[in-house]
Image (spheres, rainbow, N blue to C red):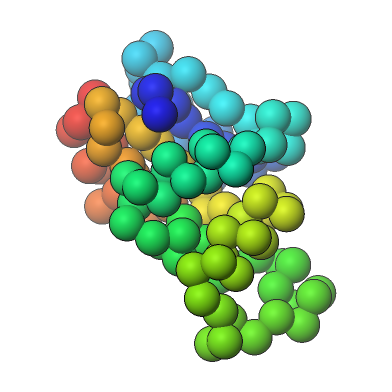
Amino acid sequence: MDNVFIHLGTCNTCKKIWRQLGTTKLKQRELKSEPLKAGEVDALKKLAGSYEALFSRRSQQIKKLGLDLSKFGEKDFRRYILEHYSFLKRPVIVVDGQIFIGNAKAAVDSARAAL
């Protein structure tokens, strides 16, 4: 997957991180208007090591759908990431074959260093 910043356009945290990165090296990809395709999710999984690493445990959809994550396997995480954009932990930053997931300071700092 090319150098990309995958985010939600309405997310203020994602906007803040984008400004912090201050780069033109990354292409922006807004999840709601341009959802990920199966092959793209699989490519991200290959970089991340698992679908679970890409999965947002904070998604409001978990409670809404009554999901029991303790019973989830990799196929379940993949399925839900593909079903609804909110199941992808954001932002996802890919730089030269490295992946940085989420808004934790360490992830953002590592992505900035990779740029």
